[in-house]
Image (cartoon, rainbow, N blue to C red; front, side, top):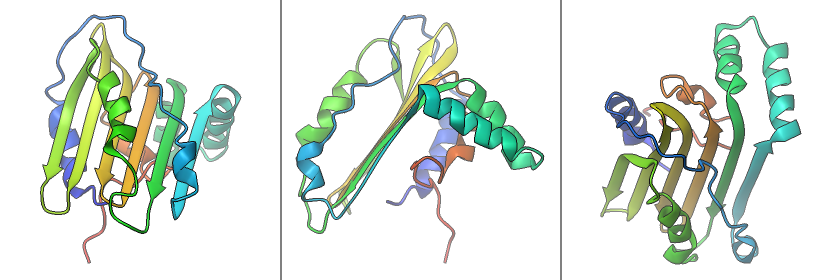
Length: 182
């Protein structure tokens, strides 16, 4: 999935975060999508929370000493969970938009604010980025990216420094948000 515009839009949107004070749950109810596993050419299902999140922090700590790893460890300290669902298909429209719209509906709840919405008619690509805010602090992040043959849903729960979130690109099944120019 092409996310070139997403990383630039995230940086700009982070500067304009709205202020809310609602007590909303930043963890989304993401379906298992079991009905899609049999028809998908590739699927990724990552859930890091509890013990696995502590293990990820411990691994990052063991790699400390490199600037990027030190910053990643700092970022992970306040993250409670990372969940990623990605499905790739060999034909267009193999999944129903209703499959991902059930997740999008949850992002209309008070406390969730849209940061970025990128919609490309050519290629039928959509990328939506939301943050869950409570008392001026980011408590959750959600990314829903879809195109005819692929979709990705990412939900990160915890106190998140949006300036540092790009360090998770390519980690824990989170797709890279920008690609190298060829």
